[in-house]
Image 1 (cartoon, rainbow, N blue to C red):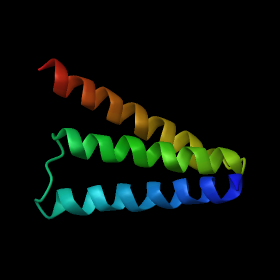
Image 2: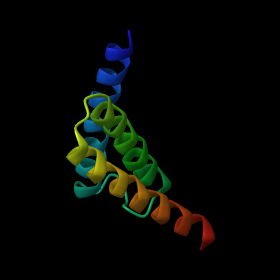
Image 3: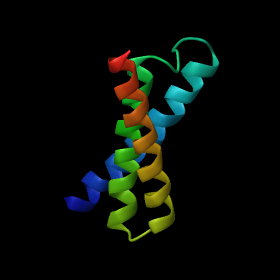
Length: 80
């Protein structure tokens, strides 16, 4: 069961990050929107969980940074 959940989170992360990227490039979603940042943060957390479960540290580090950037950007949206 644990494998299924982490696998789902990994696929969720990939789909959500790619979806947010596509929506921003096609002008559907602004990179300055709360939704764009939330999609990136939750997507990176999904990939992070899956990467750590497999002890695959390169994507884990990448997604720690990706989530941190999203969190900073999200906080800046609320502070301005």
